[in-house]
Amino acid sequence: MKAETFLPSDYKPAEDEPFMNERQTEYFRRKLNGWKTDLLEETERTLEGLQDAARSIPDIADRASEETDRALELRTRDRQRKLISKIDSALRRIDEGEYGYCEKTGEPISLKRLDARPIATMTVEAQEKHERREKVHRDD
Image (tube, one colour):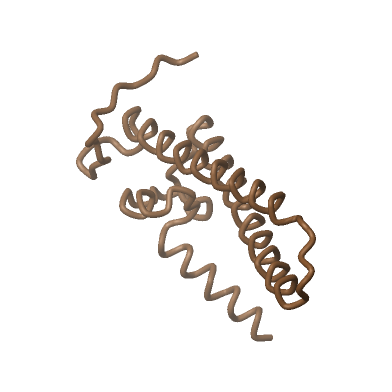
């Protein structure tokens, strides 16, 4: 097991330090793990709420409203599950030394982009190109 890297609580990755050095990778590892923990706690609360709501509601309008709320909760839960999968993938890329590099071009992804979206797998330019190509294919 690798020794934990010390990071001051106010540390932010900077462009003037070596890209994806130990401090930066530890910063993103902690950020991703914190995000995952928050999502898992939220999921647990959602599941508890759904179990509490599983009671019989005699009024048909109330029951319909409850079903709509439940469907929305389940969609949210599914999005969270997909997001957790992307977080796990990003953590794997950190472990494999591939984190922070565009999967299309191999270029470094900007630190600003990674800080805003730590699960990003492409540079902004590659992502935009990818989305334009997807839009063209969707319009066919």
